[in-house]
Image (cartoon, rainbow over all chains, first blue to last red; front, side):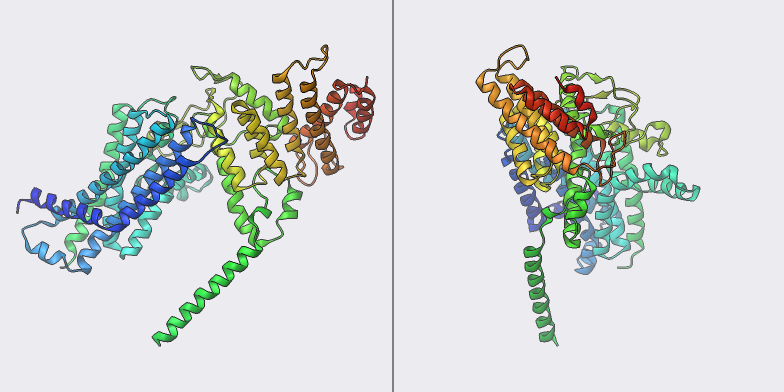
Length: 261
Length: 319
């Protein structure tokens, strides 16, 4: 089988699985309900309070998509071994790298599917409130969030090959939720620590992807003040995401290759 | 064996339900008071329950987080270290701050001249060990060189956060006072109702009465002429009487609450801060001024003598 076609077939099966499973809809339904709740909130009968809706919605959309992607990505590889579905696949002329690539692409497409659904919810909400969408910053934010999904998927693949499924799930969720906090704390405590501690913080800074770099919601929220990011900055962020995806993906591939079938 | 495990499971579930019921009946998270918006004595009085403390700390921290968020909104999303001083916790100072802030908003989002050099949470390149990662962070997040003046934005969008922070913690006094002044810009009646809600939850907090007093003075100015050389119209006088009552109530509560050991800078035991002192002074002064303005100079002089026992500067207001 042509490897590119194999990647496409595997990606399609992951996407279909994501669409068929109930959990992604459950997450979307919860997010939809929360956004609807925010939309229905009345603050002293005042209209035009756009920023509150914008902030809460963007946070919810980002968080729920990340959780959906992490749930989906961490179970992809372990489940293939548990259910033994990997054997008939490997019996075909599908290389292992094509298998991993297909799985990764499938998870990414599921993230795109999630974002599309959320945008379909968010945009009418903004229009209903009479707000404008600063499309430049909004689309850049979505793009960066998608880059983040690549990184999270690669990290999930890597960790699911090193630890149990639930262990990997916990660690990727921690990476996602604690990364921003870790980044802020490291900056604050750097000058207070010993040279050894400073070395450790430097390793953490470059060893772990900084999730905050993919979050443009702060600027999108106050879009009347901030311009979209310049092309070189977007290119640098794309390279940043590509670097971590490549490193984590390569290590995951190496581990997967060494794993006996 | 399996049956025994099942029974144990049901027993645990039942026990949890009983505990949940007991907690629901005995724990009142609103009885807890913490965070940045209240004094030590009140906190000690309220926080005797360990369970309420555990649940309540989360709630008050949530309100603090929302208050910090309002500061970020005002600065266009730029995260500065919290820099509102003690005096900005005073109801009297807050109303000036709000006015000053609003006057600086224009189409170009004018910069604030007085602020500057307040460190940002994301540090400057010189103080950031993260190199190019830090550079990208400063590009992606709203960031501004801390040596430059701050950007100020319209405070209208803060209103939902004040609503939520006082819902999360009905003892969050600062949320009511600051929220009331911002809300007053959009809907003065709603602002008065908001402060009234705060008073219902916290009838002993004198700053809320100070806050409502100042809002009523604004309402009186909107209704008619309040300058001293003109006779007051009945509607204006009625509003000023309500304001005077609020300032008098505030002064009475403040004098009971004020410790004896207040130093020159306005700090005293039991968490009494300079902002309390400032508001206690404002309440006393406004009570005297409004009593005189409403046509009772003798009572105004009596009040000046009474308040002078605590604040000697009130003698300057004798006429």
